[in-house]
Length: 313
Image 1 (spheres, rainbow, N blue to C red):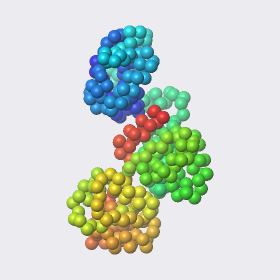
Image 2: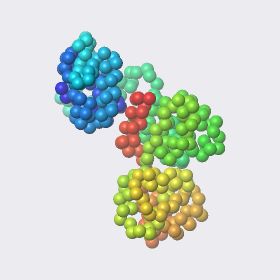
Image 3: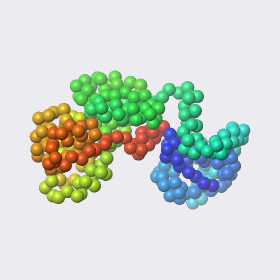
Image 4: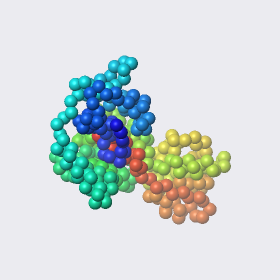
């Protein structure tokens, strides 16, 4: 038996493993009484968390599909009977084989399968509330999530929560998941918990690149971080500090506050500017300053985290 995990699929790792085990029993690849790999072995085979495997085994055991005995490990239940669905299985297998013969890749076939599935389902799309500090980033991230995950997007600025807490409660109506920066979780979390909505925090800043630049700098270097506004700049700076050992002096400024921005530029030796404001900072700084552009965007790992939260609320 061969188990596989495809991280590009819009299914959580846990759900993929559960479906594969059920499918192998239905197709008689796994038979009643047959031993399953241990949690440690399965996690090593698939490069996934051992706790995920343990959860899958426990859930399938509660359904009567698997049984777990101390000392004997986990095995297919003696009462687990294959479902009589050979015709559907044959149809899907033939379609997949034919598509491959016509030259379509596995990724293309998978994408089309889920696109067709989405088109034929009556379930409404999930709704994500973006909570961010600036509207430009919120809009860009929201568009990416709409394109990649087929979700609806609502947006709420952190400043709006501070100015009108009731607005946060209204914005959470009909929301399946809140996505925000790790820096802003505390702003929306009390309202989300009250509504029973999960909050997922992510980091958009390419921290790896920032840290690689920082390690080359001599002691005493002053770093600056510039974003659309002060709140965004502070968040970017905080994200870098959370992700590595940054001992250099750091300050931040928002591009919307020209006086503070000019003062910051005069103090800094090296400045990191997000793609929204890079040109503005470059023009103000002159050639004597080193300006490093940061392209702030969702990564594949961010999208996978959000996908899993939506699939397993």
